[in-house]
Length: 86
Image (cartoon, rainbow, N blue to C red; front, side):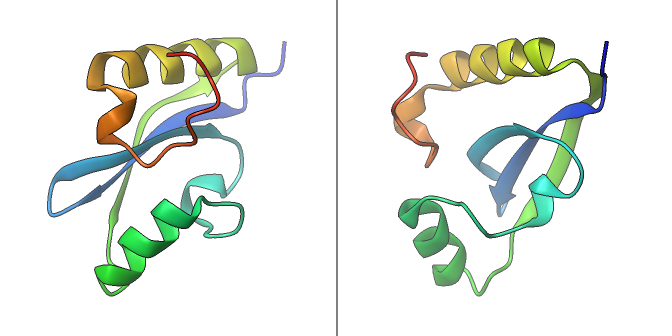
């Protein structure tokens, strides 16, 4: 089983605005982000904090953890895409 996934968050001034899962450098790249994510980061001079919450995860575990965190926080408080049911 491939366990190279991680779950991460992005914050600005200690305020959580994004929860994600990825591999490699996904947490650090801007490509593929929503317009809301890009706008918020640009409004804050491209300054935000990245924190890895869990790593060495399978894709399924990372998806489950990401979804659970989004459900707890509430999708309306995040700039994540709103296509998934959380």
